[in-house]
Image (cartoon, rainbow, N blue to C red; front, side):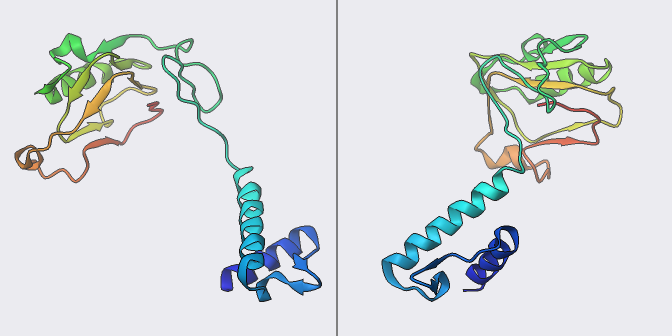
Length: 173
């Protein structure tokens, strides 16, 4: 009831009218008509608020930053593929160390790219990608699949997150 009242007030304020049927305010309707009017109000509210947000596109091998500039065409200086650091990508071998090693090297180069290639499944335990020692504008390009371990021993490190990005400037995932 409070939601309907607030929605009515905001619509009246924005558009100068109150939804009504047969001169009766919607908030006093009952039954199917009430539900139809409620659904209409909800859709109207969603359309009003959703116009304030941008969209995000995620497609295979197409990468966008907030300003719609392609990362692939951007200024990444060097690519660090996790396979080059010992990752197996078979979904059963622990690839956490390879991800950490690739990250350490990528951090040394401004505008670098850490690549998780497509066609592979990487088993990665809890890991923190910290940016205290990192250069700016690193791209974490995730084309493959990353899965978490299911054994409780993998979570003994005490990390509360599975994959954490912390203290970074200009990270793009």
